[in-house]
Amino acid sequence: MDANRPPTLPAEAIRRWRDGLRELETLTHTERLQSTYAERFRAIQQLYAFWKLLGKFPDPDTRPLCDRWIEAKRRWIEKHMPSKVNF
Image 1 (cartoon, helix red, strand yellow):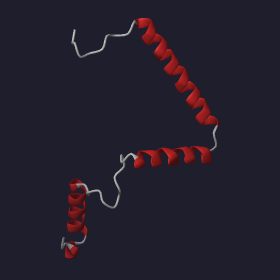
Image 2 (cartoon, rainbow, N blue to C red; image 1 turned 30 degrees about the vertical axis):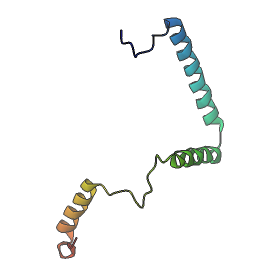
Image 3 (tube, one colour; image 1 turned 120 degrees about the horizontal axis):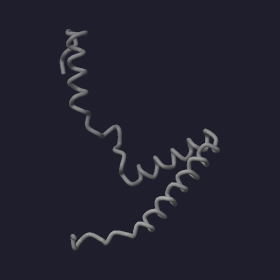
Image 4 (cartoon, helix red, strand yellow; image 1 turned 180 degrees about the horizontal axis):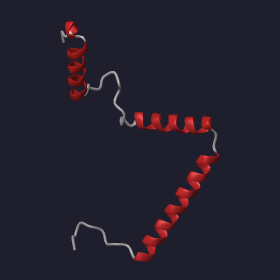
């Protein structure tokens, strides 16, 4: 057994934890279905603001463009508008 790894919990504790998690997910799902679209949208906005505050979402104006997207755009322009290829 690895000395850095914490001991495994008893099977009963794991089962109770899973049952509690399952019940929590059911309650959350039921609560979400009972809320209005405006309440759901507000919750999504709050979650997005929280993740943005943590820096998990890059600013769309400063994030680098995907090279594959640039190449796909370049090929499309070369095929459909060959006179405009200048980048």
